[in-house]
Length: 248
Image (cartoon, rainbow, N blue to C red; front, top):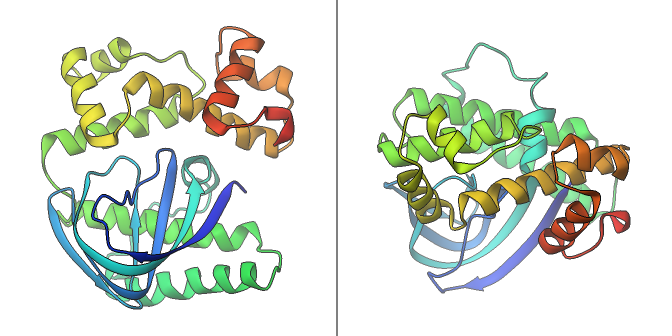
């Protein structure tokens, strides 16, 4: 499982970036408080609260004076590994138990990691499935912003993940969503913080890394994810990850 967990102490700068491209970030406020705009929705969190940030969401920190524990999980697992565990039916009452469920699942993972115990993949999947279900419920209840731009970028990132093994570019994706390619490019950069082409390449790298961790070979993955050449794949991998793929 491609994940990382970090403790960020004494955060007071509102320039702090809560989102991480290609990762789902799950935060526990261990001390202090956080106030933010999440897709134009005003949210406040205090000590003991759990919240999560997808990489396609527009986040603006209003104020922060907190210690945050962050669990970052590669989108590969959120998109692929939870597919078989997510029920078609949405538990509309889950929202009432959100804090208790997320805190319990997050705490179990953190305690196990702190004690250097093995965390079963099923434990991570349980947490991801809860977040997926909550995200769907929130969308149905109108919790997520109805702003067209945010909805578009969310759907574009989902499209990229679902077609990650295809050749993708801005013009082709713009045609799928019946929008002007220049508009899509500008909007994507504004909300996500990277260009659409950069996001596509990095998404392919992060997904391919998980394929390698799952036992696939270098000779297969660069072809599966449609890189021009093996050398191009190696260059892009090192540029995105900071190390060569054979070191993963």
